[in-house]
Image (tube, rainbow, N blue to C red; front, top):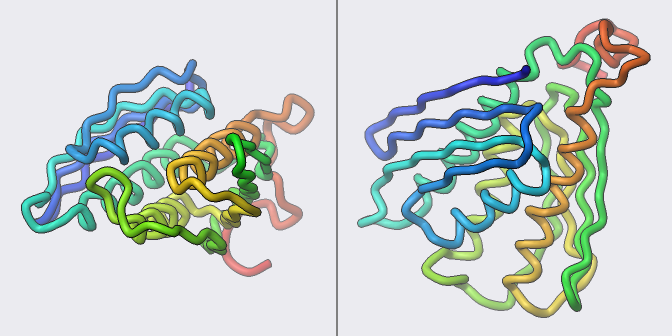
Length: 199
């Protein structure tokens, strides 16, 4: 099974992550940020990646460092579990409706990090979390995971629905992209024979 653990310690945060890419969507999440916990639980549940997250950060300042570092650590753990990325489907996409909201995510586990973010919010906070931090999480995740990631809210009014649909769409796209293609289980899905670097 494709598993990995990562510890990330800085002067601002201490983060411990374990992932199992071939799991069942079992999670234990504690970042100290209630809304972020809820989103990471959605990520695990809908990707079927088992996820264990423990983050202890400088929340007396704000949630920025903990949010960003959790994205870095989760992305790093997924990249580590993928190894050489042999046999993976590599690409995935998903449309997720949530009441009045529709979100779309497309991912390429190319080992070439890039984020396109087309998500707007009408409120500055959800719970105690600044809505501007969601882009920071997705940017950190894409960078560390080696993912080209396009995230869009096509339409929506409720801010909770907007970001939850984005996390669920990431989860479903990721679920497809990490799957092993039985027809090419021994090969890196690139004509170059490696993932990363130039096109």
